[in-house]
Length: 227
Image 1 (cartoon, rainbow, N blue to C red):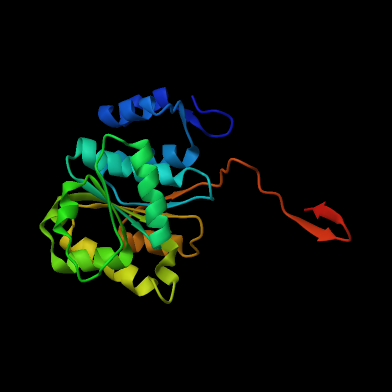
Image 2: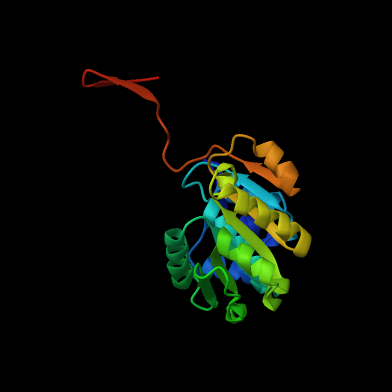
């Protein structure tokens, strides 16, 4: 049964979540899943469908990406690639994955774009920038063939004049070189979300739930008039 906020008990979704992934969520202490996570599962997260998740900040998008990665590793026996736009974000995500999933092998690469780094293939999750993954795809490193899930954080940066073209090339290469890989795009701010979902051949997951209600108002002369 869903809660008033749209959250749903984890136990109510047990039949929809692969057993190894479900057990890991239980060990991490999850008892409920947020609306974006429930909708992603219903949209085919564990059926290897491409997803474009467009929900507010702190609504649970990151866990959707992590669930896709876990499914690729524990259920599909493959690897997951997590693409972030900045090196600082890659380092942050690397530390978080190491903390939350100590039994998985986590790798990170944001360095020399001309280096193939075949040693990355020993990892379950590989965290990279779009520029680095572009280089790895072009080097045709052997382990890339085993990638089952590609999570793209901040996918709205496709519109960024600096990083957008490389990310677009990466997504195009993924669809050509890795047609079997599931693509999960995450963003809180996409204007043309339906067009992007169609281009990715992805299910669009939308929701307005956020942990803290967003209030709008006008500040004037020391007072806030809420709308």
